Length: 65
Image 1 (cartoon, rainbow, N blue to C red):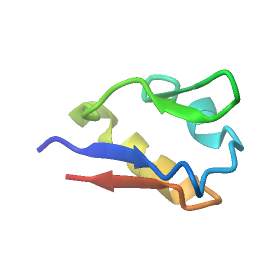
Image 2 (tube, rainbow, N blue to C red):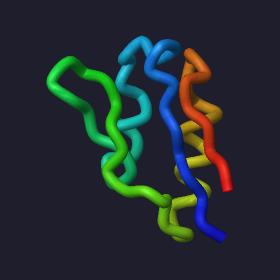
Image 3 (tube, one colour):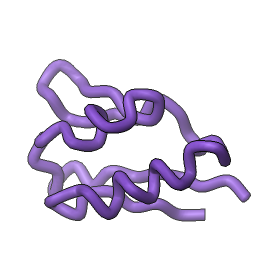
């Protein structure tokens, strides 16, 4: 089943933990905020995406699907 990662831009503080830990899922924009590289998240990266959600200090990431 496909999973979709979403970013709450208002909650995100731009720490960079997510794109630093999983550049195959996320990158950053010119201001240091995360942007998705792939959507939906490939099945082989779903566990890594789940880890990103749990690691986000601002709880700005959600994994749905």
